[in-house]
Length: 307
Image (tube, rainbow, N blue to C red; front, side, top):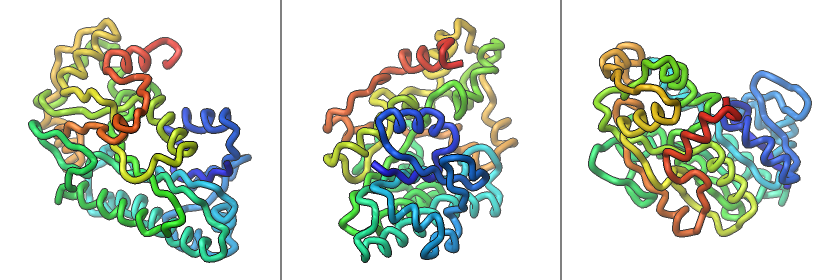
């Protein structure tokens, strides 16, 4: 297939792009900062990037499918008004303009037949006791409303284009994301649970997340919203204990929630609060998780091959 890839140049892309190339797909990779070989330089969050006859619009017209994972990282900076606007625009504007461009291209029968669009488990809000499946409603906090609007923007594509929405949990790999930030601390023997340790972490190994995208591309039975999480979420305390075990290091020193709150403000809620999210639809469709349990996922992520 000819694929247009948006928001796939970073942490997930490092594994996703080689996987898709090995499967024989032809990739056009959108990058805001680089027009290197095989990459199309454009900012998809700007309406002018999608005007007719622009490189991005032309690439869309030639694509069989689009993978859109664009979005500024959620929990790396304080949620100032400017940062909140960036969190929204990088997701919602990109997806809104993409959906409009797909609709325009569909009128000439030159449009992709599949959109895989990102979302996040922040859709559900936080809880220590509830479990969330794809049928659970959105929360009414900042992240819940952001994810709802993000998904609504993707849903504006025409019926001729199959839509797959991935509500993604914490993606695990050693070279980035939450685990990448935790590893140096744990390897030094200073790791431990953040906050109370009782909050849920709904995670997925990056290999499984990339395999899910590849499966959605090739299998037309995949349609609608999926929780992109492993079937065995863990509490923060369990996660840290298992990570220490995988590294052969102690995991006894808790990180006070107040310290994280001081550094990240409202953004700390992503780490200090959590949600138990279950991949009900993936399990019903028989998706095969290579790393369905946390011990295996952390062992793989922290092995010498992954460092």
